[in-house]
Image (cartoon, rainbow, N blue to C red; front, side, top):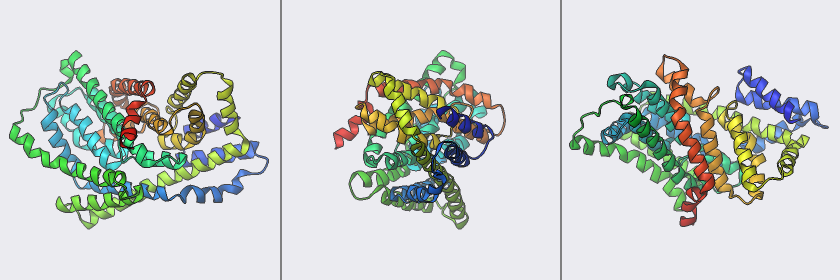
Length: 427
């Protein structure tokens, strides 16, 4: 049964079908092959229950917030400010790539939007200043993954909806690991440029007056973060209400920057509908696939498989981590998350691990899937923004950051307090 599932899933993926269609068709095939009563009769009920969760209303609002900020020119202004403060480090503007991605992640909640926005701003600087192109592109693709870890993260909302976990607790848990991961990415740049000084360009001459003049451009993302995340932690707003406040804040920033126009809003709404439609289709199809898994007993068999391994908690956890790393090579990240979290979370919680901590671990494992071929979405986003050259350049450039991400995952496993300290301290 497991072999059939994997064969159908990967076979359909190789046909380059849309991910939602792949998940739905896999469910139909498994239902036809193994279900006593056709599980397809439950598609309507499952689809309704999947999309009738009030928490998910926050998703289109966060997407709209990111779309407005993307079109308001906020990223360009942030990048200029961060470049002025960080260009003296070995690696120069690559540290600005990471820092800007971290700040934009705190306003968009999307890794793809983060990588595309920062890439559009930063890539023209490669030849202008003589950076090593591969490492520079890798820094954009890798730091873009911070969009789903640093709150407000759309993926953390979906994890909370799947596992009935507290979204404010998940947001608190993701904050410190996000900072640690950004620091490790910067250390990877620093180490690479120390070993090969020619990979980093000469520092750009910047005066202290120019640095100070750029600080006001860092206020809007901080304001959005405090408005959205602060209102949740203060108990003033639910995640959905906080997302709507974020949209109002984004509109205010666009108005102040004089970019709030009817064509801009039309473009932002169209982008929001496309992204939300894609995400909801994946969520709906993955819920149906999970329903089929339960109907044919596959979920029970997977749980029994891990129980029969007769291993300790950490040994089992590392098997699950390996499973995510392998599946991440072939599956789109959101579908991977929605299809596996309902299966693995009960196993991990039964072994004594915290579900909030496991949520952060899953997000970091999904981050590896975003920068590993053949379907690493951030690799293709950066290559698309680059508009030329070989995809292999981006793949090779991301390798030092992939190593840093794997080390961060290991650190999170060995020191769970990286994720749980802040929620416990503010509880």
